[in-house]
Image (tube, rainbow, N blue to C red; front, side, top):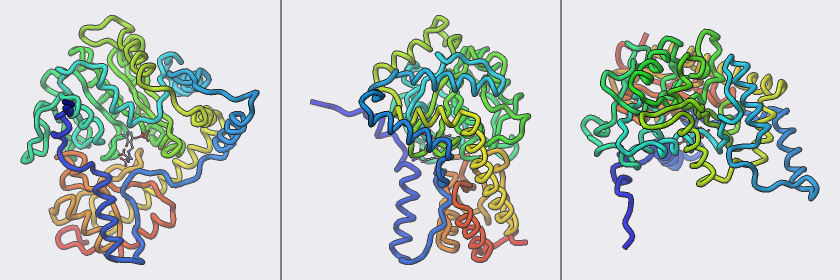
Length: 415
Ligand code: PL4
C-alpha cells in the first residue's frame, strides 16, 4: 500500500498567495465592474528590455533551422551564460568561477530544493518574517515539529525575528544551528543587510560550521553602493554560503523563468571535504533537472550584456520610482512605512492596532487595493502588510489616490 509523506500534513494552512487571489476573486465577483488595484504579489509588469527581446527572438529562429537547432543542453547551464554570470559578479568585485554557477528555472525551485543536500537532523534558522518557501520546504522534509497555532511557529525551527528595533534584520542566533536562510534585500520587509550584519552571520557560520543560504533575488534593487549585493562580498563567505538569485525581478523574467545558484568549491559542512557540497549539488541537478530553457538562457546572456544591463536597470529604476510614490502616498495618510529604499517592497504598520488580515480586508473593501498581509510571512509579520512596487505607473497612481481618498483611519494615525 502506498503511503504519503505525512510531513505535508504539518503545513500550517493554504499557501499565502493563492489565499490572497481567492479573497480578491470573491470581492470581484460580489462587486462586478469595480477595478482592483493590485499591489500584492511581487509580479513584474513592464515589457522585457529590447536587447533581451531581440536575443529571445534570435534564439527561437535558430531553433527553427535544422542547421542551428539544439536540444538538451548542459544541466548546469550553458557555458556562455555561466561565463557571463561570472563576469557580472566580477563587476560587483567578486571572483566566482563559471563552474560554481548552476543555472535553473528560477530562485523559488532552488530555494525549495537546496535543503535536499543536507541532513534531516540539521537545525534550521529562518528570518521571521520570510518568503514562505524556506520554511515550507523544510517542513515537508521533516526538519520541523508540528505547527503551534498559538505561537504561529513550527517546533524545532529557530526563528530570527525582524523588528523595528533591529531594522528588520536580526542578529545571528544565540544557539547552535546548522542551516540559516537569509534574504537581502528582504522579502517582505524591504530591509537590506549591511556588510557588518552579513559579516556577523558569516563569522557565526564559520564558528559553528553552519551554512548560510542567501537569497539575493532583489540585489539589483540596491541603489546604495555601500550595501552588499552578494554575500560573496563578505570575507569568509565562500566557505560557508550558497547564493540563490534570479532574472525574474532583475529583468522581468517572472514568466520566462531563469535563475542561478552559486555553490562555491570551498563550501564545507561539518562532515564534508572541500568540493563535496559543490559535487553533491551538481549530482542533484544532473539527476533531477534537465536544464533551463535554452531560449531563456539566450535571454539571460543578453541581460548581462552592456545594453541589456542598462535597459534592465532602467526598468528597475521605474519600479523604484513606484516605491517612492507609494511611500509618500502612504505616509501622507499617516501610515508608518519601512523599506522601499533599496527594495521593491514597502513594509507598512497596520493602523489602529488591527491585524494584518483585517487591514488587508480594509484596504480591499475601502480602497479596492490588494496588498499582502505580513502575518502570511510569519508570526513577526503580524501587524504589518507588504505593499509591492511592481505595477504600471498609472495603476500605482490610482491605487495611491484611492488610499488617499478612501482609507478611513480611526486613531492616532490620522493627522
Ligand atoms: C508569487 C525572495 C514574489 N507564485 O521567480 P523566481 O522563482 O526566480 O523567484 C521567486 C522568489 C525567490 N526569492 C524571493 C522572492 O521574493 C521570490 C518571488 N516572490 C512575492 O510576491 O513574494 C512572487 C510570489 C509566487 C510564489 O509563490 O513564489
